[in-house]
Every structure is written in structure tokens, then in C-alpha cells.
Length: 143
Image 1 (spheres, rainbow, N blue to C red):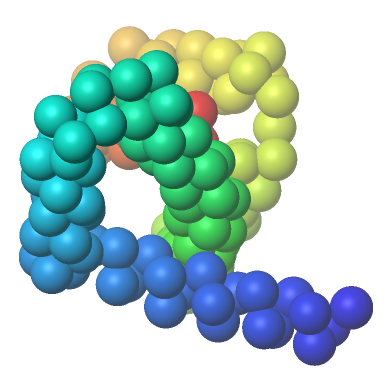
Image 2: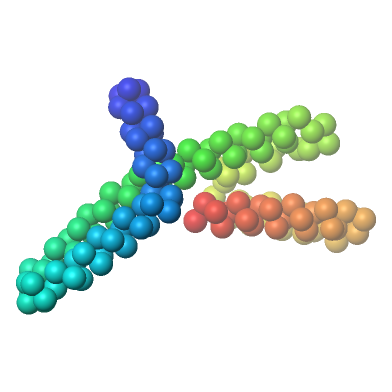
């Protein structure tokens, strides 16, 4: 299973990288133009329309899995980098290392705790607000 994961991850990374290049867009646009140009030849038939609909649906369906694999790997790498920064900072609380594993209710309680701390210690309010915004951005990226 390890070899299959490694092969799929490599293929997914390569495909996602290639799909984001200008020539991939040009190729996709050329396919659409060629399809549209053949419309009169096929009388703009239902089959002619079905060809493009089926093709784009299949490509979209497969790309979702490839891009999701790449996104999962990138997110995990970012989390590990953030964990290392938290761990290396003597003032950081290591309890925050696994925030991404908490459910939404638990995250809301942590957020409320930070808000309460900010009201009790106004001198740290700006720093805490920034930390809360960062936590919110991480939650938004996961959704």
C-alpha cells in the first residue's frame, strides 16, 4: 500500500502542478474551441453536446481527487511547520499544537478563553486578536 500511496502522491503532485500552468489552460480552451467549431458539422446534436458534457465531467471528477491529495499534503506540511515554530518558542503554549484535531465546540471554547484573557489583560489584547484571526484563518482553510 505504501508504494501505491507514493505513486499516487507523485502523480497527483505532478498533475496539479501541470494543471496550473498556462499551457494547460490554453489546451483546455483549444478543446472547447474545436468542439464548438464542430457544432455545425454535427448539427449541434444532443450527442455533440453530450461529448463535451461527459468529457468535462470526467476530467473534473478526477481532478477533484488529485487536487485534494495535493492540498491535504500541503496543509499537513504547513501544520508541521507551525507546530515546530510553536514548539521552538519558549513562550508558546504547547497545548495549542493539536488545535486542528479539536471539534468546532472545543475550538469555540479556546477562542472564548482567548477573548476573556484579552479583556483581563488589555496589554495583550492586540496580540491575542491576531492569534484568534490566525486560528480563524486555519479553520477557514480546512473547510
